[in-house]
Length: 151
Image (tube, rainbow, N blue to C red; front, side, top):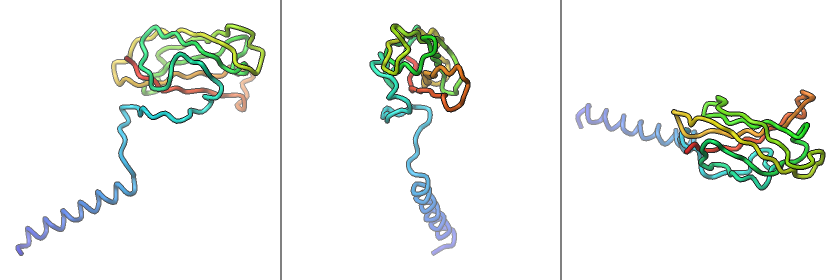
């Protein structure tokens, strides 16, 4: 067998072995530009219920968010809500306002409206519900981050 053909076969075998090893070591490749539609339980999601939006939902401006949050997320009947693009840049922010007595550990209805311009690049982002923490102590910091899509 001529040497050139043998070298090509050896290189092909080495290439196939490297590809197979890469799949075993790194697992399946997932596109980062498109968020997964499969959503697992998000950290701090147990502190929210009856939201009018869900993870992975397509949103437009203005976005009115309503739902219920545990009273401990409020201080003086408010907490902050941020909308960030795929890169974490804040493109909108608002104050969620309690609609009933917030001085409880039970769920409290709230609403907030976010006005934003749809990002030009990529269509995924995150809504961040940030627990109000007037003490500034790190043990009281918390956030609920919900992935969304821009329509």
